[in-house]
Length: 204
Ligand SMILES: C[S@@+](CC[C@H](N)C(=O)[O-])C[C@H]1O[C@@H](n2cnc3c(N)ncnc32)[C@H](O)[C@@H]1O
Image (cartoon, rainbow, N blue to C red; front, side, top):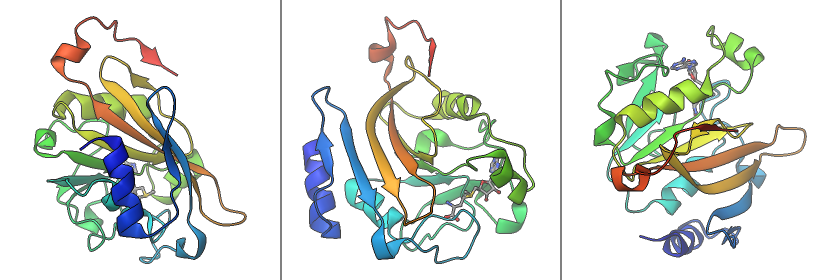
């Protein structure tokens, strides 16, 4: 399924206005304004705004198996899948620190959603230390299958290795007035052939 078809699926399934576009460099860009759909149903601190998962699901109607990393109290009704969190009291499928996902069968998943704490203050709310985003992306790259997508929600574009990931989409997320602006970055794991001539340098 190509990106024009994904955007069509998004418009058809969500009935939201067309807000994603293919830029001249081939990447998808756009903005989602969450409107009335911004509340967190679970009440969990930092939870996805209601409607976010429905939008992502509409972009990937062909998904086979989903993994939620930094899963918190994610709404599995909106996006069924397995879960990874460092907090065992949340009963995730895998209790793991996202900096080392070697014990999670990442190759089984074609769609991985990640929602880390965005700041030191946020991390303190979960009694964790701030995430090293580049280390998490490296850990994901070590196990993910070629072509797998990571949908990463954050306040920054995480540092990544261009030998490992292509950025397919960058979408601004506006929750509502006085809320932080976020960005959803969609990475695609590069295949071996695509990686052949790359130097593997980190990018900012
Ligand atoms: C922003 S919340 C995710 C909320 C989730 N999207 C939801 O809808 O409920 C971040 C989660 O990451 C977890 N977390 C923080 N640091 C982690 C780490 N190093 N490895 C795994 N999980 C971590 C926290 O326990 C918390 O549940």
